[in-house]
Image (cartoon, rainbow, N blue to C red):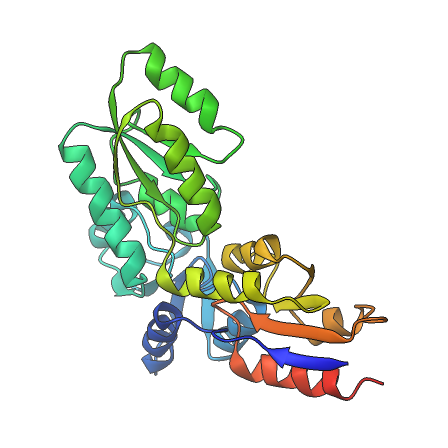
Length: 276
């Protein structure tokens, strides 16, 4: 089996910066609000260094150090952290921070805001928190038409659209185009450049199959599987890789999600090239 490593792959600049901030902290206990990135290997390495991951600030003692994940967080959470005198380390991805600013700007203009993304994702929760309640809606391809109909029924003519940064870039473009058929759309909606570059590399691969390395909880990893034009496998651990049947595959592409460590990809490629 011929194994080809797709480029680019693995850590994006936002993840590199977030990890640099996390690993720079020494000598004190750190509480991570949500996993820094959605990757089991990274999370395990941080836990080994004394990190404690929590889902709410209620789990963080007053005055403790808390690290905000690369996915960003809402103004309400930031205010609560300040009120409780928490020492905050902010690892928000700069591209995510740009989306937050766009939502604040749109909200100041009084626009109804549509966030393309998954409502239960940490990044989307933070983005939605930047707009007044009732002025923002989260949309996927399946719910977009219903949201558009509700807005149109109230006579809304102009809307704002932003996107979770790890969505399928083609899907985001198609959804924005659908909204433009009915509304005057003010938009900054796009996935981050690293996400798009990795998706484009996967779409261009024309071998027999692709192995995408990353967590099942990772949005950007799942989107890489989704955009592949050949059979796609996903694995986040060596055990998962070993359970995949690669029989009959002559040309296999390998890539990693934006939160997948390079040394894990190297280990997988070494294993794959040893298969008979």
